Picture (tube, protein in one colour):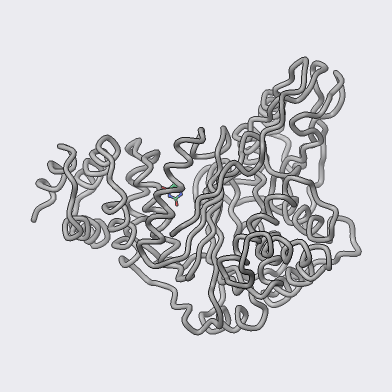
Length: 436
Ligand code: URA
């Protein structure tokens, strides 16, 4: 076997064997396949695609390329939850405590944010003192005692994906459905959970801009997980506007806690309950989706889920004060409203532009080495369907440094699409794809 022949085979649209895919992945992780051949192979996959079997072999081989989390010491069926990346998406902070309160063990490894979407680890780190690095023993002990722990992804998890992703990023081969599916699923498989709930975002603020491509990605990821022996479900959800009202790390933690205390925005509550119910169902704490949803609603309304988040935060060293404004989380020094330049109904809010605005204010990273400001972000005062008068505030910028405020204001103003009538509502949950 040699790399040239394998690139040629994929370039000509032929199916690769499992051995051949494993050979390529080994070459990517041990460095014996040079950058130019990895990039050429990725481009061949971009144009020729891979079937579900090839994609599963690729995901499994990549998962095997580094460390794998052994969750066998956790009691019960471990369930993971993963979002393909959205703006204002803090559902992990709401859905995990709900599922954990219902008795589902959640041992989650998460990443940091890059670009216009935030990362769960950055959100948790906005809670003063919260530790995202835990020893293996501490992590397992917390999951067994509290039912939920969220830590940052280990440095040696899926090294093959790290190198391949970096090269895809430089060679215009990121947006290939089999490469995205195998990249995401390799990390999920290596993270060790027995069951995985995927939230596949659809819309301008997401990787997948339309429903058919999101469905293709979701079906492929469900097939990979099922093929690798995991229980799977994918929920396709709308990302044509940000989720909830807050975008930015500490702002999102606040909104998640508000939601667990019964005061959060309707869309965040609806999606978090749905994802938690899917976790409860896969974790076999309920026999039907309806029974799982009823448990999720009980956990939320009884306050058990809010207590669960308090417990998680305390176990991981975090401290906040629910008696204080903003729960004592970091707050920006300055706030400024962004006003509507005309009257009308909000017909859409470009989530990508709002995510970019939050990133410019310091809430996100343009490159991995950037240091983020946990306190800053964008607070939306209007959502799709709302009526707005000229001069009324649309959003509030929370910021500490003013040099990028004008760019952020422009992005926010342009993000709001105003029209003379309200458009019919778009459902938040667009489809659900269940594994066999
Ligand atoms: N997220 C990933 O982890 N990998 C991709 O390829 C795209 C999004």
